[in-house]
Length: 404
Ligand SMILES: Cc1cc2nc3c(=O)[nH]c(=O)nc-3n(C[C@H](O)[C@H](O)[C@H](O)COP(=O)(O)OP(=O)(O)OC[C@H]3O[C@@H](n4cnc5c(N)ncnc54)[C@H](O)[C@@H]3O)c2cc1C
Image 1 (tube, rainbow, N blue to C red):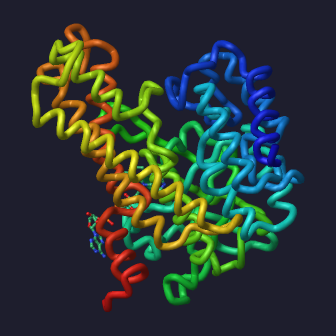
Image 2: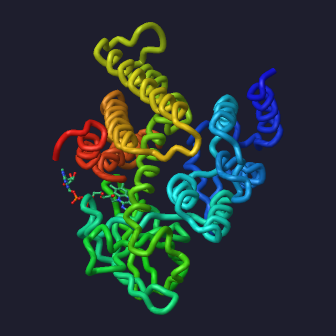
Image 3: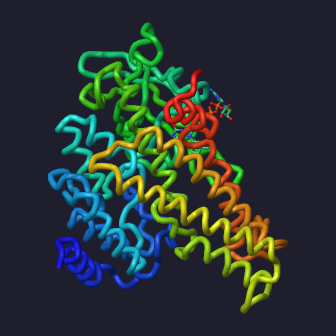
């Protein structure tokens, strides 16, 4: 038996013994995901045990070093854990920007003290993070950001406004870009800094989306005093850190919409077969080929695109050496993931016909209302994490080598 086979048997046995029965068969996101933090919500409540047991094993972040709370595993072993979890249809014990964005960035750029302090808490789901990049006049042109950081002894005093800060109202810490040298060229006067949002000089105000939800906020810093040791990378060298983090953000978005194997869905079923099952329901066609040939074609196309995309991302990961940092290819994956998700949610709405655009009950089932919101939410995919136009510019310049 190979080392990996033996590990697989061990993982399967451990998961089977330790995954609470209430979370089995939930799949990827039958629940909304556990984001952790000081105000963590566990749904169902047994997710708390699941998180604690997995964190104790180091399997909330299997490839991170053990001294920072991770599992110390290579990619091949980490993939075995993911596969065995998928076999048992177990949800991830933890999700969020800690694991997917700031964690990998600290592993690369953080000081030893920052890694010890923050990575361990991320792995245990104790602190929830949000991202303070965008400002009212700095989105695609992020380097124009104006939030000021003025040095005062061993602190920076931070004043300014961020916008579109996802989940700021639920988060404990924010990683932010601030202007520490207003005289320098714009990319060269930016610092990447970690801020505890418990500080009374940090305030957040939720913004409503077209989908009716308020997943993001305006975040204001009104003279927040932040210790200099919270700077990640060099003072005025934050642009390099910021760009590296964006690579992780784009990979996260690509994964969320099918890049990690193409088998995730709103209800924990394979996305393609979910559309197929939906069509059978709505067209009242329990058996045989679906009566609508063009719909049949579109569903199969959507399944194939999702699956092919998942496998491509997986192949690119497998080919990458352990510790590989996402490069410009993350832009490619982000654009494609966005399009696949937009087309899929659009198709789901069309399949549902008159039940496809429900806004409130009565007259619509809960999952029909969710579907309308998912369709509207998908419009934001081509904006968040850098717009599709910006990703296409990056692909043109850095992947294809086209002139400006
Ligand atoms: C759902 C969602 C969640 C988000 N979460 C966060 C978050 O947590 N933290 C955070 O900091 N930000 C977040 N954002 C903000 C996001 O990063 C910005 O919206 C995005 O970078 C675009 O910036 P902007 O909105 O200012 O648009 P603009 O930059 O003003 O762009 C407007 C339009 O012009 C186009 N455009 C601009 N420049 C160019 C160019 N050079 N070439 C071609 N076209 C161009 C854009 O593609 C876009 O279509 C989120 C956004 C969304 C939608």
